[in-house]
Length: 329
Image 1 (spheres, rainbow, N blue to C red):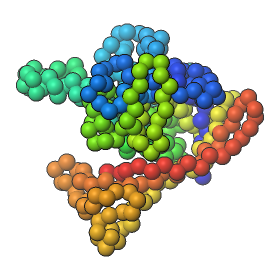
Image 2: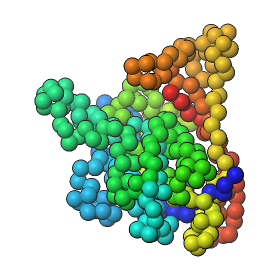
Image 3: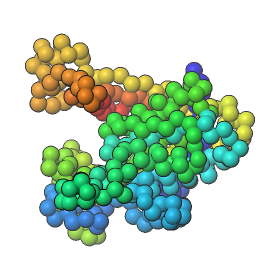
Image 4: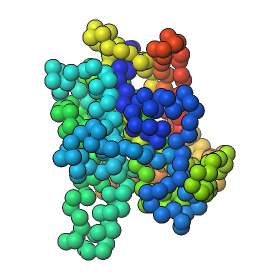
């Protein structure tokens, strides 16, 4: 199996802007959760989230470049710029058809989806805002990354809820294993919006925490989710190529695999359509919708990733087997 190295990192997070700020926040065990100030949280059961503050896209690209981008696209492109710079790659000397962009996102720009449909409902088809529509599709961040870097290779976006970016990592590895490309910009991005926050609150998914300014935030264990936003991009390439160009290698991706965690449907029927410990609501048999080419039910999957990570400052190397559960539609 081909050895895959990670040679560049870009991060826009609630802990800070840039990989150094993110890493310093991790070392200090600092929480990125804070009181929401971007929209009114009075109607909701929570008023905290891992919000990104002090992010200025002009620090990464010109206003002409980002003026029509959504917040999620701006963060994703900014993270990609930092990752490419960190990797030392010179894309001008590369065959850009051999460079891929793979991104993961659960919802894309939910704020633009909300804004577009509000204008459609309020003013009808003729009054719908056309400038909002391009950002309503979840593959907008990946497209903007390719446009900014003039990348002409494969461009893919995976939407697998909590494991979107991790699933993208498995796909990126397959592109490198198959010698389809030489470099992959692999990342994930999400944005926090009022419509998304409200939806999670409506289904009882939020950790019910309300704080005043300056108060310590103490999440309730098992009490629900704390939403967040941000973007991160990794540069992935074959280890042999990375060593030949003298790249700084952060770590290597040893393996990534996907498997379904549900038993066969026949077994589920014997259990009354329920899976112990997962849900008290019976699961219906998945049905294929020919008109939309989608499945009508979700099936849980587990993504296993093995990463060997090298910490340059301490010269320590450790292996991280990660098992992440999510849902595959």
